[in-house]
Amino acid sequence: MRFPAPIEIGPLTPAAQDAVRELATAASVHDGVAPLSEQPLLRLGEDAHDLTHVRVQTKTGATTGYLQVDRGGDVASAELVVHPDHRRTGIGTLLLRTAERDARLPGRSGAPGQRGVPLRVWAHGDLPAAQGLAAARGYESVRELLFLAFPLDGSVDQASAAPVPRPGYRVRPFRPGSDDEAWVALNAQAFADHPEQGRLTVHDLHARTAEPWFDADGFLLLEGPDGRLAGSVWTKVPTDQPDGVRDGEIYAVGIDPAARGRGLGALLTDAGLHHLATVGCTRAVLYVDGDNAAALATYDRAGFERAAIDVQYAPGPVS
Ligand SMILES: CC(C)(COP(=O)(O)OP(=O)(O)OC[C@H]1O[C@@H](n2cnc3c(N)ncnc32)[C@H](O)[C@@H]1OP(=O)(O)O)[C@@H](O)C(=O)NCCC(=O)NCCS
Image (cartoon, rainbow, N blue to C red; front, side):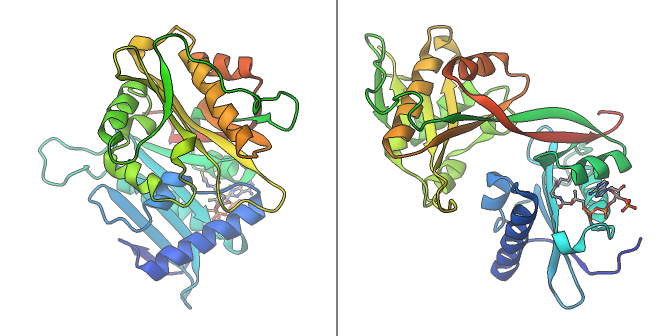
């Protein structure tokens, strides 16, 4: 090991959380892609039995690396980043080895027969460095998350008229407080096969509705003829975008499995695009799994094109 610096495993103090955010920003500026996704950033301050924070520092206390492992799902999902000024010194390898050990821990200690879960590591942007580290440690790509984009500046006039739902259906904004449980239940149904989105709880929902970007008018629910939720489209316009950039994300489109095949996904996608155009976005963006043929077809028809890719790696041979 070329690397002599202190490593700290455990919950992060507020100052340590700030240091990790600064590290993530430095990597974003250097790499052109954010190294940590929204959920790990939202959980920096959490102290949970199935969540591990690992921070690497210099002897003088500067944060040079960070790893978060979430062992709460069917797989242990890890995200890690090394400060651009401290790369190729073995910190990435150290963090990855720590993640491998952490994934072997049971979700709850003491439960009989618990043996940990397979490890998955996200590489946002699938940068050459991540590919190099993955190859050096014998990892294989097991999942692709595509980042799609669609220009909203004049090519189609999405702002002119909101799409009209079919008779009996109604599109309305989310009502914080009264729609929470019903939406979480709908989301779990709609994303039953999705490892992250399908696990969102009311607590996770509240973490997002408390964010500065949250806008209930951009979170649209589709009510069916029976008055129950049949689907939703949630849009997100980040508040900290650089000058001249006004991206709006189709954050999640979900349709109740019982209501699929009736064009409701396309309707909600259009409703989300209409909202983003109305609030002045010049580009719509979204993430979709590379093997989600139904969603890819919907977004392809709407005119989205592939702009970037995130890859999930697993230690080979794939477990
Ligand atoms: C990927 C990342 C974590 C690597 O961190 P690191 O501390 O520089 O990695 P290490 O020093 O442990 O590198 C170990 C090996 O990985 C490979 N590697 C690392 N960076 C590489 C690069 N830029 N190009 C090719 N191979 C690379 C090499 O084989 C290296 O061994 P070597 O230096 O003896 O040649 C870092 O570049 C980073 O934070 N990137 C942005 C976030 C990210 O992509 N995270 C996902 C990781 S899967």
